[in-house]
Image (cartoon, rainbow, N blue to C red; front, top):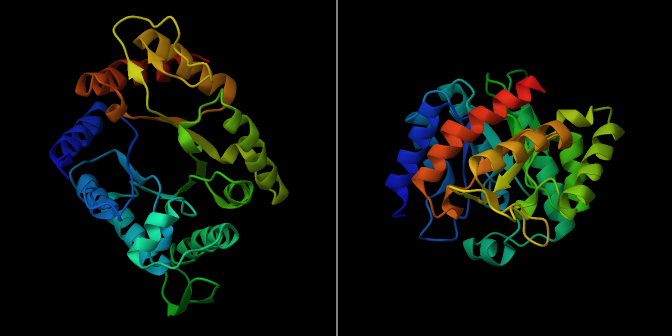
Length: 286
């Protein structure tokens, strides 16, 4: 929890610099970590324009009707500056230490799909909701009068990727996989096929990439490792790479992990003041 002052300072800076969103992780079984939704609430309260997303919400530990109320409340308080990042649960040995029953892979995916639907049912006004699901039940519960937030998933397996295609607004590839990775090339078609199967435009599901890479003073001779993973490089290398990711590979957004960059605050400043504006300008020119 010692990172709290630096986190607050970084997000306030990102807001002033005009970045689009920030992320917080959700690992409530670690005592040294800040709890995700209290952190998200404070950070949104201290900013004015930037959106916040938990990547990803530890769904097995949060009752879905209460999660829906949290999200619609945050949306109402911040003029819609919240995104629901959600997954089926990936750290089950840790999750069960919180007293939560372990779900098998199939059940976890069904719980994910059910949760997305229920959060949306409990948003946007309308008639009271009664729902008898496999994992959640509500009786005559009034939906909040604000719209449901966008939903991004951290899906990895084929069944959860299919849920993403059918229901989600965005997808964050797991393990910081980028647009040149085998994981992305195998997974994105599953999302697209699932979207098309229910009459959705596959392009409506945004892809947002995590990038735990360095921003360096000088260009790197090898900005990718032998597996093809992006390692980083100079501002010019980042700008060229991310512009290509948008224009050639359909990327919709990027998360820069300053914690993975030894340059720290300087790296975040370069991201916010040099790389992001340059990519936006280059993409706009096409």
